[in-house]
Image (tube, rainbow, N blue to C red):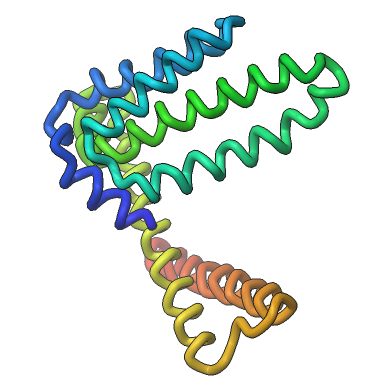
Length: 194
């Protein structure tokens, strides 16, 4: 998934736009909508970002999946607010969540992570943080690739059959990826110590 997001971001027509402009374009509405109490303004913001997604030609199915996942998180989080603040406040929070998810997905699918890190690495005070971020990104890509390989191997041997089997096999995948990561950590420590 991380490789696909990076590929979509690099192939996007707005990939060459300055990353700070896109960061401000996508983060400022999230901050402003956090203080707005009018649902009409939030809906206008949602419509604007849907239009920007259309203009940027972002992958609609992937954006929809990301938006639905974030909205599910908001739905679960706002269940408590329904009893405390009322249904109207909970719906306002859901609209804010929809707006924020559209803003973030536009930023994710139009800004290559490398470009953003390259820009921030120009500042001496956060250069080390940018180097660490690049390494962490590579590490996550390796973990994702390893997990996909294990899943494919288990499926080829008849894994992931039925609901209980899927849960059991997915736990095995997580366990194997975690175990392999810890084994690599030992090797990395030995190399650094030498």
